[in-house]
Length: 118
Length: 107
Image 1 (cartoon, one colour):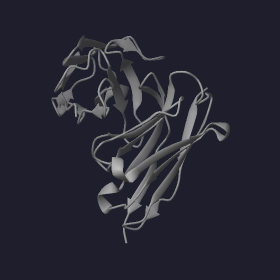
Image 2 (cartoon, each protein chain N blue to C red):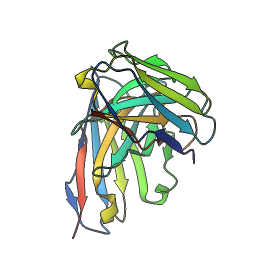
Image 3 (cartoon, rainbow over the protein chains, first blue to last red):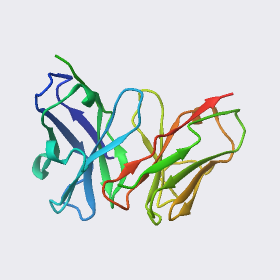
Image 4 (cartoon, chains in turn purple, blue):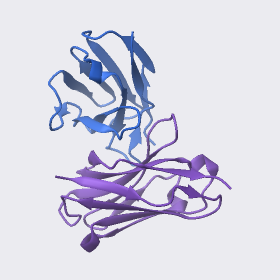
């Protein structure tokens, strides 16, 4: 059974760095074709794809946010970490991590709401 | 960036009706298209991938079709639990992009 869970702060101040951790079980991030992605959703708005890291350490970022995003994995701890620098109130959103198999996001975490406010 | 355009934005329908949702890509995504269902306060749920393959556990009343730039999601007979927001997503071209969603309302 594949499960994922996001964790991190619920409130950050503008200009701070956000660090979110996705802890998963039921799969290995060293398996061929597997990845873990991050997607966010501002309140009442659509989904926005952010980043993806693959079993082979390859990674991809949304071009509009690439300069502020870093995604890393710790295969032994079954975790993926997303860092986002220079947070702004427009970054207030629910952040989801999701299991990816050949780029299809088939299992999602419950999401974590992050608010950006001074 | 591949822009995904969904139509309509909102659809008011009655239980039992057949519904067709549309998704158009600004450039070809081949068959690398997924559909998700999202209910309030919940994470998205994968319904369809590869444009037409139902995900595990998805009822047969959900079907997807299309390739290239034009795609549809059809729900053959709406059940009460199907009232939700539906998103399409392409995973052919970086960055992987979502549509703006279609909300199914109870008429």
